[in-house]
Image 1 (cartoon, rainbow, N blue to C red):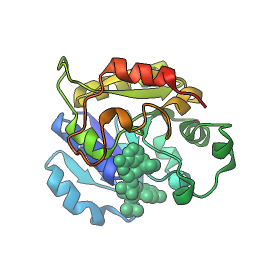
Image 2: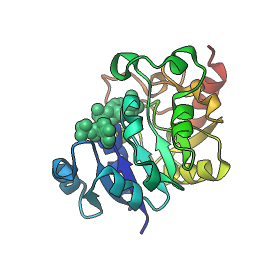
Image 3: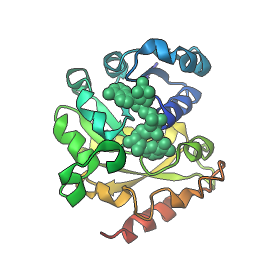
Image 4: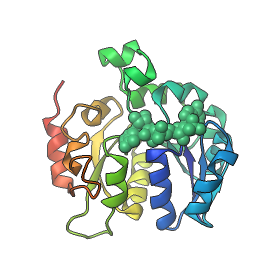
Amino acid sequence: MTTVGIIGSGQIGGTVARLSVAAGYNVVVSNSRGPETLEELAAELGPLARAGTAEQAAEAGDQLVVVSIPVKANGDLPAKALAGKVLLDTGNYYPERDGQIDELNTGAITTSGLLQRDLPDSQVVKVFNNIFFKHLLNLARPAGASDRSALPIAGDNATAKAAVSEFLDSIGYDAVDTGSLADGWRQQPGTPVYGAPYGPFDDEDGTSAVSGVIREGLAAASR
Ligand SMILES: NC(=O)c1ccc[n+]([C@@H]2O[C@H](COP(=O)([O-])OP(=O)(O)OC[C@H]3O[C@@H](n4cnc5c(N)ncnc54)[C@H](OP(=O)(O)O)[C@@H]3O)[C@@H](O)[C@H]2O)c1
């Protein structure tokens, strides 16, 4: 059975872990403080889940490893264990949390472009960064549902993007191709597809945002 590695098991990483287990994947959840601090989450997720170190989560991911940590912590990622893996990068740059990063401030590179540069032996795909974690949990729908939401994905490798699209499909979402990692700014904070299409944060159920809505939002992005 396929295993998804999860590095960073907070709001978004923990939610992707929940959706993954619900879809029948094994998951290995990890964080910065060590597996013993994730025993409760692993127990809640059930028999398909276990807690490990970030390195163990990276190694356990057959193909896919979710990276869901603050951008400032990217340097701690286990590069060797992540080589050859498809990284699902949920990261957003918030200078007040991450510190000032010049290249991101100027838009010279996107957040996921930066991660790809740091980890050249992995294939980075930007995904899940534009949706509030409670909406991500509650808007998942089976394939073919008329109110199935879509998530934008950006990446430089077509095979990696296809694998991520297949994964999204299995956990309840359609994928809309944003383009390359350099195009990933179209789904970063402040763009039309960031948060808003899925409804206000105080409505935990969220509002469905089908593929056409996300496609239009990506096309309308400007900087
Ligand atoms: N919250 C949302 O709705 C949302 C939506 C879209 C995108 N995002 C973005 O996704 C990323 C994660 O956000 P979040 O809200 O899920 O954050 P969070 O709830 O604060 O969780 C962050 C996770 O990352 C782990 N972590 C921190 N430093 C680490 C390191 N050096 N090595 C391994 N794990 C580390 C933390 O572990 P410890 O607790 O042990 O430190 C924690 O499990 C951020 O870039 C955020 O902007 C968030």
